[in-house]
Length: 149
Image 1 (tube, helix red, strand yellow):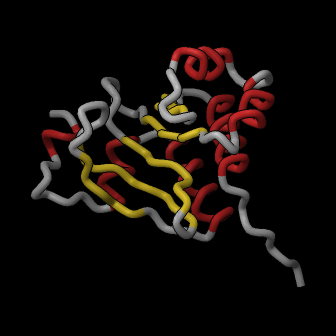
Image 2 (cartoon, rainbow, N blue to C red; image 1 turned 90 degrees about the vertical axis):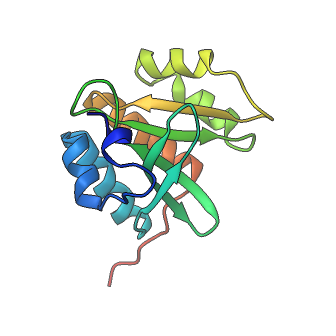
């Protein structure tokens, strides 16, 4: 049974349910990175979007979206991270992508821009892609500076 079949709009999953479904060390590492670097917790929301219907985890810093995590790829233990590259990040993102995994470079080229932004649905399937996603997130929303005492 798929994620969206198991958790319908009326059945809200807990964070632990997402973790169990994703069952990936990259999922755990990305969540920990986002929550520690930005000091935020996920918002569990339901989406009726035909591209990725069902429950997801959205991370925001203030009014700015950091990313959205979807635990339901065809193979168990995989997940997708949606990162939106807007107009103001475009040039820096393209410079960064030159050093990224070929999968991510190809994905960026294939995704058409909508209103000057690109919605990257990234399958996080390797440590390299995980690190590339972290770099894109930091480019999109700069983590707050922490002061050591």
